[in-house]
Image (tube, rainbow, N blue to C red; front, top):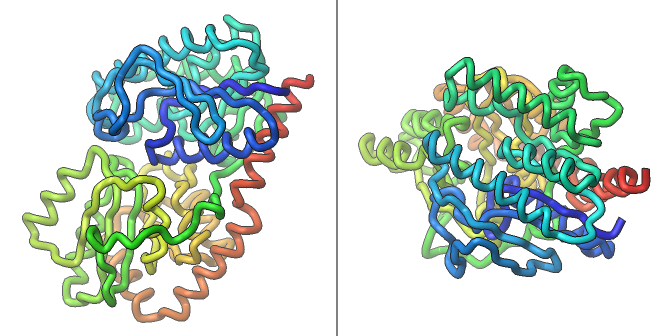
Length: 406
């Protein structure tokens, strides 16, 4: 195998989990001598505004760390709402198929979700170009959008489920991030032996302390409990603010929220209205700044709302906290993520949507630093042994080579 064609809705300089995973795998594949071509949007997530230095042309090309990146015309819209986001997805699907048809001499197509229509584009490109197709499932669609009430019409959901089944059955192999995803896909009749589970992981080479951003945030002597990621409907971050209110008499405990998303305005309004002084909300950060915020954190917050679907997910940020020796405080339904926390004793799991219990556990970690440090060390050992991005990228590459060879 000499050439991988990769379809992804998100890619750096965007800094969400799909963009990071794809990039961190691709740069490793390139180092083995494999050519990688990525077809993606012009960077605009999550605000729907082009990143500096980019123009929304029909097609542009650039080279990022040896990766050939083809960017296609993008319907710009914030990561909120239904109709405009759907148009954004459909435009990507159509233009990605067209761009894939023009790429020469590739050996295998890989498409990753989210979003759903990216996988559909890969399936169609396979049929047109008669190349093997590997589908990576990071989220279950349409389950993910129905879980946050983004789609409620039963007829539409049924049609999406039919498209979901067709997408799965079009793939030659499927890579899932969790075992629960694997079970879900087998339920559609896809052969279990053609599914491989490769979790998210941590890029240890990237976990260095970046420049001190004292102009944005000063740790001082505070005990920092941080959430770094998307402020979305699935994360229920208002629970964090309610917990912060309950801990207002402990000024040394400070909550740091770093990121952006559909829920940001609501969160800022809540902090202002309730005059919560032990919370800082910072904007979305460049990728190179993230290790700094991980490093100054004392506890890493992982938040998911109380929904059956979120029992199946493994948030990518938990592995980065583990890689930085930070104890996890997971507020989520019991499932795969809580299983890791329990198995490796690397943090505390509480049921989702429980602000009072969240506050109690924050106070417990604050008052028991030795226990928190031990959890952090346990997490580091597990991450370095089982969730190193270097190893995980190699497993996917081996899968791709096997498919092309066969």
